[in-house]
Structure formats: structure tokens, C-alpha cells
Image: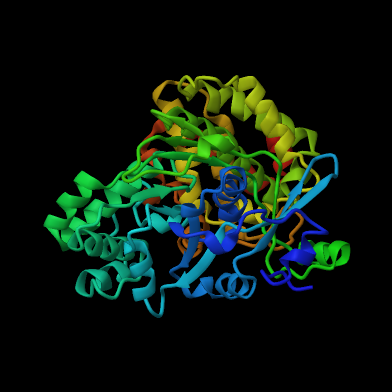
Length: 490
């Protein structure tokens, strides 16, 4: 049985389905980047809100700006925006339900006008983003907007033919201003510290180059709340699709799997109203930064610690890493000795309990989050998750050995592209060629990898770090048994 609106009545006898009238939903949120995470998180919260209070003005229109978004567009169009959320508990319990909060999906890469028009529509109050760390078009070391991007250059010359998120947002905001409409809120839901502030700074930098008057209007009218989002959402597998078919007889071409844990902390500043998400568990706060930092430096950095080291050892999944006592002990040492000391006070959070919960979440045997997914786009992740922690510990004379091993391992990983057993490693990174080229020079110049200023800034000039890094990377190149290196440190 195909998952679509027509079959929803029959499916409701098998799985929980939306109990609200989806025909009454109007687009109040336009979301750019409809991946698994958005569907397990923001779209799920929106679905819960519809069920709880019937907030029909807050339906979601998904948007894809790249040709790679064609598949999810086609699947959701065929399924009338419906999809299955499969929640996998550590004890083996599986809970599935049909989510109905996405009411439309538009592609912008061939025809930008429909996307600009829905953003500019009076009913749209929020444009939200999950475009990955790399989608913000800034240098991770300097934080400066990258005007060299060919798509950005195109947009500056052809503002009516946008290609990036900045071009689309600018075109839509201009249309609203010209029509005398209030601005929408722009809400980043990506794993970037100060994600709202960064979105604001990058967008204004772009618009100032294009239209100074519009930039002034945006600066005065548009709100950019910082947010902290959290839910582990692995890549959907064919086994997940088969599970729904075999268990329920439902054909869903792109379900989403996730863990039971979910968290969303949002700064309560919006341009023109917001959904009452607090009624379904979202926490609205005056300042989200301490929560962001805690999550990025513990969960996201912890994931990268396990991912990079696990990839070299040959572990295929994060839960496999957590079945290895050396990895568990190393992860906790990193969190306790390097990440926790540089965190700010996080009101209402017990850090030890939070770290204990992370260990349980990472160990969930039913999630099986792949190491390759966690390691993907490390060049965009590590500067924010791990290298920033390292830099703060250098400034305070704190421990740096656990982070340094991960960076040295990242060098070996980027150079050799194989694990300690000689098996190939899948590397997914927009900077993979540059990383490989720099890492390849390590045996000639042991500092070559960390001389990439766009990633490491001036860390290669820091004597304490450089000496430890050289010693660590040389040990790995002589003996690739990463567990032995880890064990020696704990």
C-alpha cells in the first residue's frame, strides 16, 4: 500500500496517523534543506503541535535549492508530503508513526520564482534552514563570507536568478519590502554555534554588496534567533524501507529513523509571531549560547572523536565504537578533561547526567549511525566542534592531548584513505582533495596538514600544540594501531 493521503484512512488502522485535517494547513514555515534531520526534528515538533492545538497556520513548505534535492522532492510529492518516522529505542522497541506537517515541496534550482514567491507570501512567517555547516559560505578559520564562490558571483550579477540560500532570501525579502509586507524570521537549525548570528552576518554581508537600502531594512526588521537542536538521525537504509513493507505492508520510499531523545532550545525573538512550540516541549530562552556550546562541544565533538578514530580502527558504526571499552573510556576522558572545563554555566542542566545520557545514546544498538556519516564534511565540522575546544584549552593551559590525537588521526585518514586493516575508508568531504594533498606531505613536513590556515588558523605556530601534534602524528604513521595510541593516553 502506497503511503499517500488517499490511503491514510487504511494506514491509520496500522500506524498512528495525523488526526488533524491536513487540507486546512496553510504554509507558515518555509524550510530550506529537507533532510532526515528536519523531518525527525522541526517537522516532527510541528506535527505534534498540529495534533495538540490544531495550529493550521503553521504548515511547512519544503524547499530544495540543489539538483541533488530532486529525489526527496519526487518522493514527498508522490506521498503528498507524508512520511514515516521510525523511532528506535535502545531496548529494541520500535515506534513508528506517519508525519503530516509538510504540505508542499518546491525545487528552486531550475525555476526560482515559485520558491521566491512562497517565501514572499503574506502567510509565511518563518524561513528555516538545515543547509549543513558548509552551506553558510564562510571561511571556517576567519569567519569571513566567501565572495569567490562562483554561485555568489553569479547572484551579484543576476539577482533575479538566485542559486544559493543568500540569493533566494534576498530576493524574497526585497519582494516583501517592496510590497509593504513585514519581514519573516530567518531561523537556522544547523549545528553551528551562534547559528542565528552567523546567518545574520553572512546574509547582511551579501546584501550590502548588492543593495545597501535593502540591507538597512533587513538589519532593522528581520530576526535571526539562535537555536540548539538535537536528535541523532542516521541515514535511511533499504532495511528501514523493507521493515515498513514487511511489518505493515506500507510502501514509504523515504522514511526517517531516529533515536527517542529530542531537544530544541530557541531564543525567543521572532519578526512576526511564532508557533506555540513550548506546548510540545521546545524550550524558549533569552540566550541559547550556553546550550549551543554544551551540545556542540560534547555531543557533536564526541561524535567526531568516535568517528575519526573509529574509522581508522575499522569500526563501521558509532554503537560499535561504544562496544569497545577503549573508545568509551577515551570519549569520557575527552569530555571530562577537555570539553567540560571550557563550557559556560548551563542553567537547568547537570553536566554529568548529560554526558551519561550521551554515552547511552551513542551506544544505542538499534540506531547504528555509520562512522562514514559522522565523518562526512569533517572540514566544516571540526573547526567548530573540536578545533575551537583545542584553541580554548591552549589559551587556558588546559589539556589538549585527546583533541590532538583526533586531528593527527584525521591527517592519516585524509592521507591514506584506508583503515588499520587496509580496508578502504569512504571519505565524503567537499575539501577532500585539499585535505589529501596537505596530508600527503606529512612524511616530508610533519606540520603540513595543520598548515591549512582555513581550517587551523595559526595553530601550526603554537609551539605547545605543534610539538605534541608532530609527536602524535609520527606515532600514528609508524604504528597505525589507533587503539594502542588511545590506550596509552588513558
